[in-house]
Amino acid sequence: MDIKKITPARILVSGFALVILAGALLLTLPAATHNGQGLPFLDALFTATSAVCVTGLVVVDTATTLTLFGEVIVLLLIQIGGLGFMTFATLFAIILGKKITLKERLLLQEALNQISLEGIVRLAKSVVQISFVIEALGTLILTLRWSFDFGWSKAFYYGLFHAVSAFNNAGFDLFGNFSSLTGYTGDPVINITVMLMFISGGLGFTVIASLNPLREGKLRRQRKLSLHTKLVLQVSAILIFLGTVVIFLLEYTNPLTLGPLPWGTKILAALFQAVSPRTAGFNTINLGAMHETTLLFIVVLMFIGASPGSTGGGIKTTTFSSLIFSVLSTYRNEPCVVIEGRTLPNDIIRKALAVAASAAFLVIFVTFILALTEKATLFPLLFEVTSAFGTVGLSMGVTLILSAFGKAAIILTMFIGRLGPLTLVFFLSQRTAGSAAQIKYPDERIIIG
Image 1: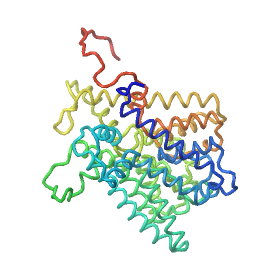
Image 2: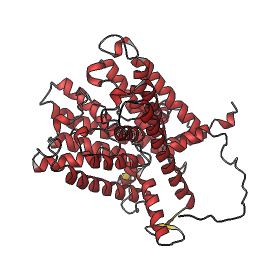
Image 3: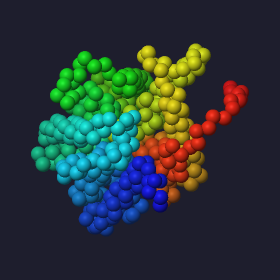
Image 4: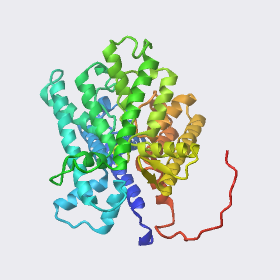
């Protein structure tokens, strides 16, 4: 292969694929399962992909099927997948005193979804520091809480596993029987801690770093937040609030979900389930018992997902907001998209449209294919595929009845969802940067609408 065609996108796709394959092979070892036979390769590949792509969809119950060795493998895959293998590679290079080359900086830029190379290595260091600090705090709180239910060693292990799983928006749990956190629906400590973990993981490392008042030892209070940070915070807050209200109202009288719960627990459960579809994958109430209108709303939340440069998936909050503002500008017959006194460049709008259209096509196409091959009705399949693309991990029970072909389709969907549809397109593209001819053709209008 021509060395010039080894683009950052190709290295990222290949790197993630190799990590997944390595994880799958480890999960096929006899030591990985309680029956001493290891997972069948397809199930191991599915589990490894779900862990690296921080999704949480599972074809085997993590707690009852995997040994401690298998669970640790899953935990490591979640951590590598959430932060990105290039972040870890950079960390090891810094520890070894190795100079970070320009090509490695370009890879980091692609992996962390940054606009420029300025401060990219410093950001990678911040990513690791921020992640470990938040995960350590989450581990501490969850360990203290679960020490009342288990011994200290089990409480610490559960605290660590679920803290890493929550911050990286993975959704893997150790409570068995695919129950997630349904045993703690009314527990404020566990609910609030886990929610804060996956909200912080879903905001994006750029946003978290920009909110740090003592970055590089200098006060940043005098500096204004960037448009990106403002959009992420505002859209995230709106989606969480709107999601909580909608789920609360739709499920308030449902006897199988919020109906029997005390009023305060209803609000807590609605809030948790509104935040979780933003790619976290945990649930505290039975999803299968929800009304279809509620589940359709959750599908929309899963499709939007988290924010750029985060541990979450979906088309991202900034993509969604860019499209909304673009539509509003069209309604107002304005020549450009303006957000808070700043004009959004046309290339950003085109990229947002490409991401959303590609994602919608992928979800519809995979759902259509699975409707032909799987023994499940259309809506649960749509829910499953959207969950896989958004790297959410919520399921209506379809995962457990997938055929071999269905598992392969969901594996590919999770992989594309984690890397992003455009990254995969750039991976397959034969063109490199600057290879397109800079030719302006004559304008000609077509009729729209």
